[in-house]
Image (cartoon, rainbow, N blue to C red; front, side, top):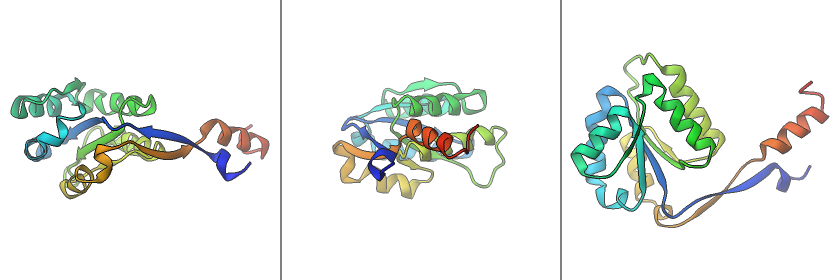
Length: 161
């Protein structure tokens, strides 16, 4: 199997679908960041988990599709949309100083974002760098592991039986 077969091209479109998520103590920071970046965010489709989505919509006037709150499966809903190719950018202001009851869900979302090689910011400075990137206003083609090919190869090598 050649390197070319190991990856398939995925395209993040010019108009992105951005998931907005924040833990409780970071929600105000997310709302303030969205207000500061309202002009750029208005060019894209926005969604988010429960309260984060509602607060951003109420305080900025931006339309934000709401999923369930994180502890009620919202992180998993966002992750599923990443797998479907329907969310291709995540801003997740997490609270590193507070234990989260749904921590496994958060870790699963972060993992799936890595697997599908989509941009994810977990703090304001990273979000600032991402939102001001030249790629915000253009398509971005990137290689994602060809999972079918990867599984075929592992079966041939005897790793999956």
